[in-house]
Structure formats: structure tokens, C-alpha cells
Length: 230
Length: 230
DNA sequence: GTCTATAGGCTGATAGAC
DNA sequence: GTCTATCAGCCTATAGAC
Picture 1 (tube, helix red, strand yellow):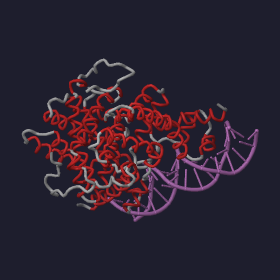
Picture 2 (cartoon, rainbow over the protein chains, first blue to last red):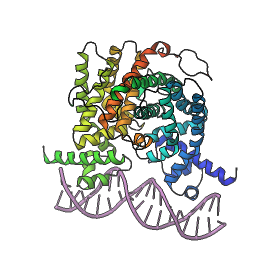
Picture 3 (cartoon, rainbow over the protein chains, first blue to last red):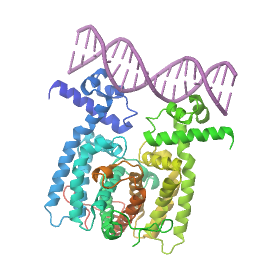
Picture 4 (tube, chains in turn red, blue, orange, brown):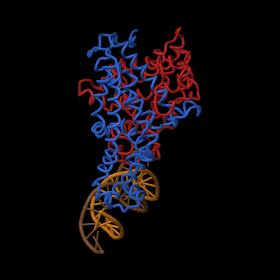
């Protein structure tokens, strides 16, 4: 690695850590420069603007995460029959493994994309990086559970991302509502629990596919009984 | 309403709308002042700091939302037997109804608490306002589905909040992964689909309660087969 | 309570020496 | 490629006239 490359990586490391901890807006270019031990001007020289720096942070590790997910999904495709659970695992487990055992950089990155991925502001950036695989996972979900309409599979995928984000963003809601008895910091445990939750959710979707599965929802009384019937 | 009260409400209205649209950090006190049509100094006079202004925005409508949820939960408690679905509806439907039919202010507020509620930064503020009811909903979930351990009920509650947040934050992921075929803007439809998803999820939790329900997870092989067994 | 003016500091970005 | 010095603008918050 050339010296310039090394400098850029150092800057990206510092930016990644700071952005993950404090968020894009509260972190200044000076904070990043201090964290990386480089002068301020060097960051603009290498990355142009703050926004481009952020995009570079997101992009740096995206392809490896995508590759691992692609690989895991491919392995699932060779199963017969592939289960919904296996498809969900192919999406979530690479993310979990890298966050837990990929080192400090991946730990920051995992938190960063969780906190970034649900904001309207960076939606196009995130979907540019990770959206490519989304439809292949949705395809796999429909294949594993043919009762799913494409709409329900897509909605389920989005919900799964929401749950994932909630787990990895470490927002401590679980700690608070459980009075500290359970902690959101144990990601292994969170994963083990999220899995039956999500598989159950998709089974619920499949079971109700006939009643909610049309693109135009069936006419239903407006005020009372908004509830979907069993 | 006195003139000063009216001024404060006007400021809160403008702050609510701006914060919901652009986020706390990107909105300046000057933006709020311009939006409200009042001079900058008046905001600091009435609310002190920007952070306190934000807290006042969140607090203003919190009690009404809590009251409606409390009422709905109380009605569910009189059902026999209460269902998981009914408990979830008691949490989600007041939020949906106010967002859809409470006027522009509630529409902004619904978006704002969705975008705020999942961030680490405002976690204590949000749980101060909405955490009180959380344990009553968790209690109701356990009562409706006694196979749930308290841990699973708490985790399920948190996941439900994540899904809710994903729906109301309008981050357009659904629009993108579905190629515009389905839209995240139709909240009624999103609610109707989220309901069977979430009830299925809790049923999945209940069915797996014996295998994942202990506080200390059972010993399980580290590298392969992280998957929870059926 | 309302409004104006301004203090004091931090921001992203750049020009220019080396 | 690296580093220093600096620009111009925006920020929150406040002092003081009315």
C-alpha cells in the first residue's frame, strides 16, 4: 500500500469511528482530522467534501458485506427445499459475524449503517450500495414460501431490515424497558431471538396472503374493525 | 389562549414541521424563526435553548398519544381472551389514526417521533415520554400469550417499535426495492400488512419459547449451525 | 413580551508555501 | 502529498432598547 493510500485509509478509519459514535452532523471535519492525526486540508484534498468522505466510508466495506451475503444466499439456493429461515440467515448472519468478529472497524461500520440506513437523508446512498441484492433476497423469499405475494415479500424484507437496524443501532430501548435485565449489547442473543421472530412473521404473512395479498386491498369498513381477520 | 401562549404554539408548530422534514441538526433556530414568522430572540426567550425547544416539541403531543394508547389497551384488557393482535393494535392504531387524520401537525409529529425514536441520541428523551406505557404493553402481551417469557415479550415489543418506526419514517426503501410498484406512503396499507406480520412474529416467538426462552441461552455450537433449531 | 443588534465560536472549504 | 493560515458564512445564545 502506497503512502497516500495509507493516509486515506487512516482518514477513513477515523471518520468511520466518529460518524458511528456521534452521527454525521455532529462530527466536524476537524474532529475527523484530529482523530486521524492529519491536518484538516488533507481530508479535502483526498475526498473533496464532507459528504463525499461519508460516502467513501460507507462504500469502503459495502462490497465485502455484499459478497458474503451473495455467497450465503447462493449456498441457501442449493438447499432443497430452501427455508425462509435460511434466507433470512443468509442476510443477517454475515452482518452479525463481521460486526462481532471483524474487528473495531467493522464494529463501527455495523453501527454506522444501522443508524444511517433508516434515515430518509441517506436512503439513496444506502440503497445504491445495498439495494442491488435486495431483489435477489426477495426472490429467494418467494421461492422458499410460494404463498407470499411479491408485495408481501418486499414488505417483509423492509420490515426485516427495520428489525435488524433496531438491533444493531444499539439504541438501548430494550435495556430501558426491561429495567436493565436484558441488554441490547448482546448481539448473539439478539440474533438468536430475532430469528424465530422473523420466521414467524413471514409465516404469518404467508398464512394471511389470501386476505391481504391483492395489490388493491379489499374493501373494508372504515372506522371499526380495521383489524385483519383470521 | 393568551397572546404569549399563541406565540409559543406558533413556534412549536414551525419547529415541529421543520424538524420532521429535515432533522434536528440541519434545522437552525433561524429556520424555525423564519418559519414561525417571529424574531430569533423570541425563541430563546420562550424555550431557552434549541435542545429544550426540541424537547418541548416532543412533549407537546406525547400525553395525548399516551392517553389514546392507554384507553385502547384498557379496552383490550376487557376482552376475553385478549389476543396478541388486539394488544398490538392498541399500540399501533392510535398512532396511525392521529398521523392520518389528526391534521398537518400530527402528521409531522408522527414522522418526527419515528425518525427520532430509533436514534441513540434522543433515546432517553423518547423513553421518558413513551416508556411509561411500554411495560403495560409488555404485560398485556404476556397475558395474551402466556408462552412468552418476559424477555421475549420485551424483545418483541422492541422489534414491533422498530417495524413501526420503519413504516412511519417514510424512508422509501419499499418504493425502491419494489421499483415503485408499492409505496411506503400508503400508511393504511402498511398497517394492514404489518399486523399479520407482527402477530405471526409473536406466534413464532411463543412457539420457540422453550428453546430460546431461558435468560442464559443454552450452550450451542459456535461456528456452524447458529440457527435456532425447530 | 417583543424585537434588533451583536458577540463569540465553530463550520466547510481553499490558497499557497514546501 | 503534505501542512499552515485564513476566508467567508453560519451557528447558538444574549444584551439591551422598546
